[in-house]
Image 1 (cartoon, chains in turn orange, blue):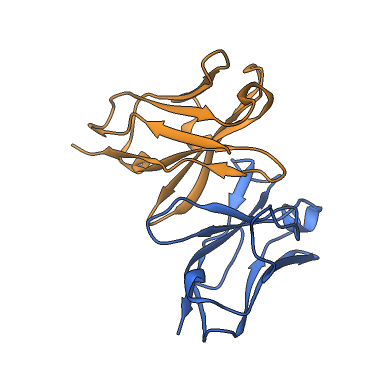
Image 2 (spheres, each protein chain N blue to C red):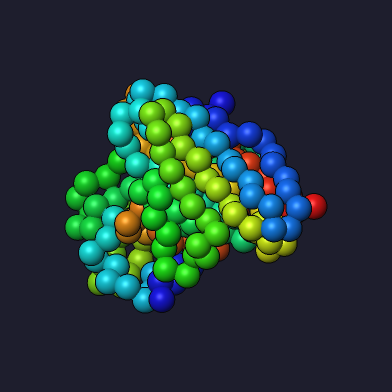
Length: 117
Length: 112
């Protein structure tokens, strides 16, 4: 059974940095595209970034380009999201999600990032 | 404002049939991209309910069904049950936006 566990969420000030992690188990992590999706009460669900199984191809939503970096460690079955220059509008619950038959087949439980002074 | 439009809320009595619409455009659903549906129960993460327009992952009850036509898609819950109460989101791929994937704004299903 696919199991994804996010961690690293915190309360941070605007302009600061934070790194989220997602530990994967129950599937061959190195074979799958992985994503970060965030959810806010006001904007709902928003796709943030995705990464190819080998880690070389990455895509981002425009609002985070140049600030966020998605990466993975296939040897340790870990997915990361490095978030720099955080803004108030980045406040959300962040989910990692595995692409399978659909675009987001399995989701973690989420980790809360709050950006506030 | 989402590019995939869903009704904010639908409701029904147990056993009734409810339909949730998802209206897109020629840059997403109408461009032949698949539509997927997610169920989010209170306090939980989203869960894939329907993939590629009308396919159910293993373990999803057959009272859930999906379809797509033109620039729209629909999710039908036939035989509504109390445990179906929650939020439902459609999702597709979009070629016009700043992001590759778009989600609907969500529909809250209430079981009366």
